[in-house]
Length: 221
Image (cartoon, rainbow, N blue to C red):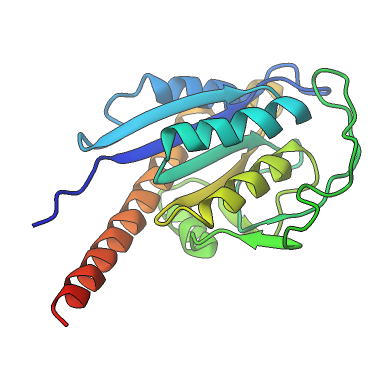
């Protein structure tokens, strides 16, 4: 029987940016990095807080993905408008000029010049949002990840995942922290992150089992 390789998990958050000097997505990922019970023993957990900078994300993220080759990637970012966890279904190939944390404006209006107008996650966002609500965490699904670095990062990761099967990618917007006027406390966010990861690992396992069945069936022909 074929031995399955460990499932590699990548969790990312963002650092500060204009208007948000303390980014709760960074604190969430730093907390998750220390939660050794978060992932099963047959998984490798990697975490990274990304600079909220156009240039850094455009160069660092492809290198990070190619180096780790994650099977499951979950990106967390903050939305000042969100009042619940927002499960993003899609990333769009567009950039609206907006200053990043380094004071830099992007030099173009598309992420990939010849890329599709939209890339969709394979994760079933409405089903995941329902699972979060059942666990007591407010959540909804969303059709786009905005036009700032959240969408920029998501498009890069989804583009990478298209040629690396099986690789599931998801972006989740979280609200501001309670101390910043947000609706959820740290316990809510941690419970939400655990539910999201469990949901995605279950989906990944199903994908691996299906792929293995196809491989065995092909050998038997």
